[in-house]
Image (tube, rainbow over all chains, first blue to last red):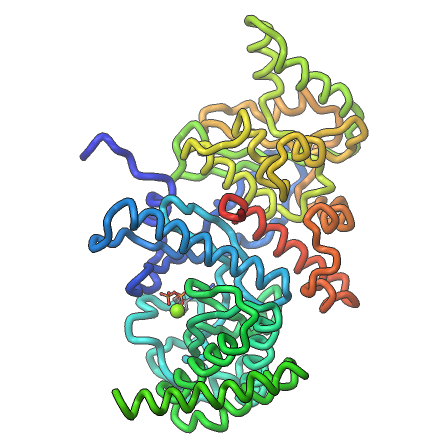
Length: 275
Length: 200
Ligand SMILES: Nc1ncnc2c1ncn2[C@@H]1O[C@H](COP(=O)(O)OP(=O)(O)O)[C@@H](O)[C@H]1O
Ligand SMILES: [Mg+2]
């Protein structure tokens, strides 16, 4: 043992349940605020069930210089938190923020009760993800029921889901927020039984930034289109449904983005022919 | 009164006691005591400062228990990391609640005023201190109530005004549904408190 004691947030991680590990961050689930003890003199408190929080821990990267690593980590946590609050104020469905410990590289956000769109489309869990599965959740992800059954529990069709995705991305772009990593793993469907009801929720704003440029919005869409085609069979009609809802929501701004999306696709194709 | 114990926090900040008092009749007196305690010297000063060693919050500006807990937790983190902007962990709660960096404004808005009738009292301390409710009730004349009563106390118009939420696209979208609007306001306000340390 060294003389240094662990920081509160690292001690908290010790008690948390590890959910997944990416290259940049480890994901944990924990109850941040303990269940209260009530004194006898006040009337009995009903109290809601304490909500779970997801902790995103940007751990130290040994390959980076320590002081550079510290400042990078801090600014990434700050950047993700700022993108989330911007989305919230703009009415884009994202997880609420619950705790920020920037010096330790930890962002605590609202736990979304639900499933990733990737899973709901039958793409399975991402290899490195989902180390543990919520024991209180419905059937395990191990034995996948047919896709339609997975959505049935949420009471919506695949088409409706695509529409929700397009609408949410459009709301985000109208607020000049670019996600930077749109994939079907980075969107979740909130279970209809949760307090906020059925919602398509965008997550993982680690690469987000603000921009008014048509180019940035078009590239954001293109990244998602590629993600659809690499993860989901017969993705074309699915993605068309996303774009249709996006178009409706964007209104007059759609034309320019649509043209630019065609350009971006063309550039992408050329690049893949060369490389 | 409700008590929360955070095992991962250093013992002197590991326990948080929270009480809601309604029908408070001595707010002006409490405010006077806080001001005087800060100025008193010698052992009398110590005693008086300990007697009012709480955060006193205007309950109308608190949206939910989670909103309050979030501010308390961020205040404790700042205290433990040596980054507090105010004098004590209790005044830091007021700072965490206020959207701006103006400490005087935070105290004026979120603290106790002469006219306050619903008061939330918070004490952050070690688990060993065990007569906290008695100490609170020695200062506040009012009815100790369940935190659940907050739902009828929150002044949503003031909350929206202070957090500059009027005119935000998020609120326009739910303008016709008061229940949804409250859920959204609560979410934005709570999230803002949580990320205040990295806002600017
Ligand atoms: N708020 C949340 N609630 C529930 N699960 C989440 C939440 N945020 C992320 N996840 C799950 O954790 C995974 C990783 O989180 P993410 O923010 O995407 O980090 P990474 O940068 O590692 O991709 C997501 O793909 C999703 O399955
Ligand atoms: Mg991700």
